[in-house]
Amino acid sequence: MITSYQIYSDQVFIKGKLQAATLSILDDKIAAIHLGKYIPTALDYSGSVIMPGVIDAHVHINEPGRTDWEGFETATKAAIKGGITTLVDMPLNSSPVVTNMAAFQKKIQASDGKLYANCGFWAGATAASVKEIEQLIAAGCLGVKVFLSHSGIDEFPNISLVDLDQLMAGIAHLEIPILAHCELDTLPASKEIIATPKSYTAYLKSRPKTWENEAIKSFIALAEKHNCKAHIVHLASDEMIEWIAQKKQEGIPFTVETCPHYFFFNAEEIPDGNTLFKCAPPIRKKENGQHLKQALQAGIIDFISSDHSPAPPEIKELDGGNFSKAWGGIAGLQFLLSASWTALKEEMSLEDFIPLVTSKPAAFLGLDERIGQIKEGFQADLTIWQPGISFQVEEGMIEHKHKATPYLHRQLYGLVHSTVVNGQWAYQKEVITNTSFGKKWLGNNKGGKV
Ligand SMILES: [Zn+2]
Image (cartoon, rainbow, N blue to C red; front, side):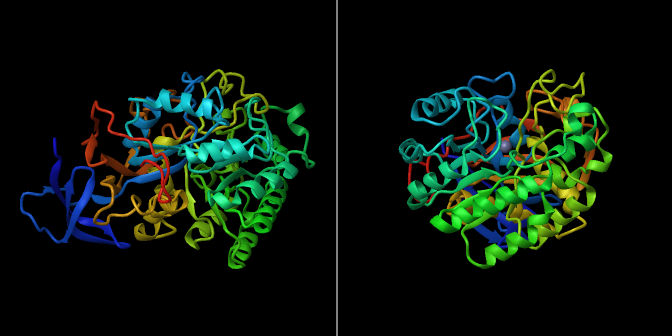
């Protein structure tokens, strides 16, 4: 059956501007764009912003193997409720971890029929496994993730800088990004956490900025040496912002993301024993978050991702409150758009904000000829929301597998009421349509079945 309809709003985000426009959707594509109210019968969304679907390049879905932590169905339902039309799954937290073809096939099978949003996949490298990476990229993975410190998952050990050097030499020609968790946990840090495991200050001191700073310097030096595309995930140390700006100016091929929890929350407000806030690198002080926001505004940090990494309450140590034992990861997928906007709306205009969650991650993923903008011929992935309307996060509205999140009871700006995935109304007037319209991104602009 052919899908065909027109939608109108007085605020459609086209070519960097919010303007009155009518979009004609035909099947899964934006077939035509007309300024103004071109067709009187178009569905009228005046008062709401229509923008390209939000893209979250960093999500831990956990299926197969740890579906009781989070699965494809729950994660992608949360995604569309939060206006996200494409997310990309990390290779760890599922079992097996995606470091070879057999594991990737299991991952692909596990996602069948469960995707409410479109989903891409990162491959993982735990040592210099160049051959396996080449196969995984040929099969459609969008890039490779590595850890420079312990990942939290024993089956996914971190890579040494020596192995990373070799890996980059072997795969630089593939022109896909290597994403690195940049912390060097072999460097000195405070040991106060051993005596006071419930103290957030002690936890913060146990993962100092120097761990991030030194890891980033080593990682980018290797990227420069091999001319290999590099990506720093979840930047949390403001001490690297100027250095990053400088290295980008020198033309080294790398990108940087940060996550809303690093600038929405701050260490000063985290109560001792509240392990909901545990993540790595840690949420730092308020001033640090302010600097991250400025770096987003200045374009030094390229885009925002959720780094959604949930766990069951017992693994999150919610009763014990022990920061050394608790799982490190924030559940925040559904609130990527609204939490980011709430924290940034005083800092920048909506026109400057929207690319941080749409066209910029699309370019990073190599999907910018298909998604990330409202453009004729592009995939009809749309988020319809009201940036000026606020709501309080309550358990009943959360689609994540587990309701525990530090965003609970927070007041957020930016109410998403409808999400279009591949031309279909996946979420309409605050109701999830009971059909999984999502597809798998296997490959990107450069090729592959997409
Ligand atoms: Zn992560």
